[in-house]
Image (spheres, rainbow, N blue to C red):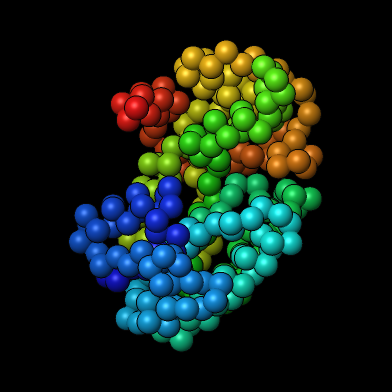
Length: 251
C-alpha cells in the first residue's frame, strides 16, 4: 500500500514511517521540508496520487488559541479535500484523550474541530485518541518550575511511550477503517505530580515537586480524570521503568 504520513519527520511520525516501511509499504514522509504543505496546499495533490492511506500526525507550530485553531482548520480542510479528489481509502489521525471534555482550553477546541472535519468529510477514518507521551515529562516539569520547586496538579495521568503510540498508529493503518474513535494509554496510572517527581528522581534532578491541588492543564481548569480514559482503552506495553531504561541506553 502507498501511505502518506503527514508530520512524518516528528517524534511519532519517524517511528510510524519506519514500522510501515519495514512491513513493506511504500511510505511518503509529508512535511514542508519534503515539499508537502497542508497549510499552503503545496505538493498535496501529487502526494495523494494513488495513495491508499493518509496518517495525520502534524502539530501546530504555535499553541496560541487562534493560531492553533487556524492551523488545524486549514490543514484539515486542505488535506481532506486532496484525499477526496484522489480517492484515498483511509484517513488516520492522532488526537487526545479527553479532548471533548476540555473545551475551555484552546488547543483542545482546535483538536476537536480537526476531529469533526474528519468525521464529516465522507472519507473512511480512524481517530486515535492518546494520553500524553512519557517524552513530555521533562517539558511538563520545566514549565511548572519556580526556582527549585515544581508545582503541579494532582490530576490523574496515564502517560504512554512514543514507541507504543507509533505501534498503535501503524496497527490501525494496516486495518480496515473503524469510522470511529479508539483510545490508547500507558499501562500505569499516576497523579501528575507523582510521575513527574519519579522522572526527576530517576534523572538525578534535585528539584522538589509539590502538589498544588489545582486540577489544571495547559492553563485551564479540568476535572481530575479528564486526561485519562473514561472507559475501555488499549494499553501500551511499556511502563515507566522500561521506558526510562530505554532512554538511559540512548544517553
